[in-house]
Length: 173
Image (cartoon, rainbow, N blue to C red; front, side, top):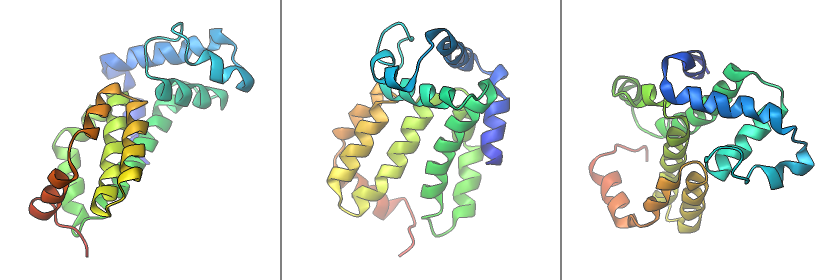
């Protein structure tokens, strides 16, 4: 939660967030009701963001949150997925330190959509390890609804991920 507050309150320091906030504020002009969400969020009038990000933004907007609340909810979703992954490791404190000091966390402050897609991808890695291919594919499709570049992750083979889990990552048994 604390990490999500830092992301939300640092919005004015990052250039991409100006676009996200302008998009979020433009929803006021759309006068959307929940019945209209399915039609209007996919129109090109609402910027060129992927449909999953637009839908999430409209849902957050419907709760009446301001700009900081908007960025906080997106950061919270991203961090929940990352924390879920981190606590699967044998020594989570080292992973947390790496997450913060590597710059990955600070990219979350600027690259909101991309980092949400990365977090969904990281969460989906568990399904590769558990040999649940359909769940992995569904997660990657979901991630691509927030950033289309995530679709490339469908072509990466499970063998690559098994090798990564065996060689690089120390997992709990």
